[in-house]
Image 1 (cartoon, rainbow over the protein chains, first blue to last red):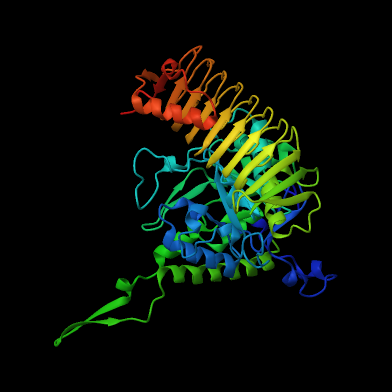
Image 2 (cartoon, helix red, strand yellow):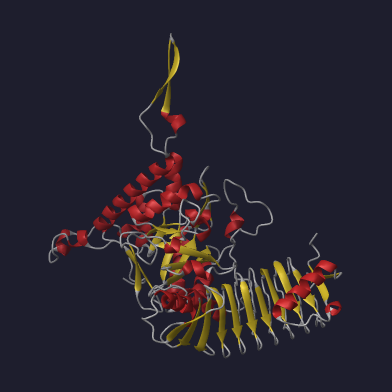
Length: 346
Length: 236
């Protein structure tokens, strides 16, 4: 299905009548793969994601270290692709580089989500970390490593997502050579290189990324800035972002460029609507932080009881740790999302 | 035993994947016909790589690490030896744009001249050009030392954050444009100085640092007093 003939609007999220399926074998759609494929423009091959969902939490919140094991489980159990900075990869219990760990491009199971290597465009390129990389995502935002003022511990400010360019590059051709360098630094046969831009001047920025040679474009319409307390910034309305980005992809003449978005998701219907509008994959971060804030904490779960003999506290049913609760909620979300995709054939 | 690996850079393997070729050669020397591994008695456990061919190719030797010495016998293209760590690399010719980009450590030596953006974003180590270098040498430098024996083009030290840029000859216009930190040492004249830098006194630690860098590059340090030092005016 190309971008042009994808169904537009939420109204087309409806199941196909049985009469139209009369010539199909029963259960055909139930067996169909629900993943998403991101094509590589150079190798003319695709990389397979088990589900069209990804998370940028490890990159976008100030201190993601406690969250990393949960994100790793999300990748393995739910097939959600994760952006994992190499700086943090060695910090959560393993001294190995994440590119050399099980699950990286060298020996990843097909049911695992992809470990995406983020590269900040205005920072030195860590080529050694990309040895087995399957997917590399250029971040056209500041890394925050050289900020003059210390960053707040709970959440980032919106200027964290100001669009930025490599300070040492002068034209598109040199940017495309740098992308070629990244693509060739891995030993994988198919390496996908994408670009992340904040939703500012969406049309022009998407055209720029396509001209640079990116295989996919990730537009940040909403970013998660903090986990506790939950904080997010909406940069542009999602409908406008998708319209502009798809228009830029259509006008570029490069059909195989995929579109990823980070947008507010409150319900499963929001997620399905994104796919209906022509998005190839979306971020689950806004939904995750909503779940994390909605989970009962240990203080809320206890119950104060009083009588003439005094007061005491009765512990309610055991409550899962917030991270585990988030993992369970995400698993349910993915199962229900896949079921609805089968129903609506999206 | 040191190991000497002679690699014929062919069209089959991309020049940016030399690290994988070296890695494979060390693990399975019998598989690759174009690689010969000899052993010499000096420098135990070190690896010496000689690159044959690949002249004019882009991205040659990108990401190489932990090699005693890598030597290529001709000129190479853009992004040559970028992001290398703990390697001593010698190019017996000219190099294209962004040679030594994001270098982490080690030494890079170019016997000829370099293109634009020489050693840009280099984080550590020493990059030396014995000839001239074009525009934006040492752009966005992050702590490495860059030495150009000849002249440099426009905007040398562009957006430099830390490190040292030593220019043995003259500089083009806008030297130190948008410089934030670090030092620029220049022996000749600059066409124009950016407002982001100011001249400061060449002190004894500067002289020591300069003489050490020149010595590492194999250049006589006889005219240290002729150098001038520039830094950011905002630096304390």
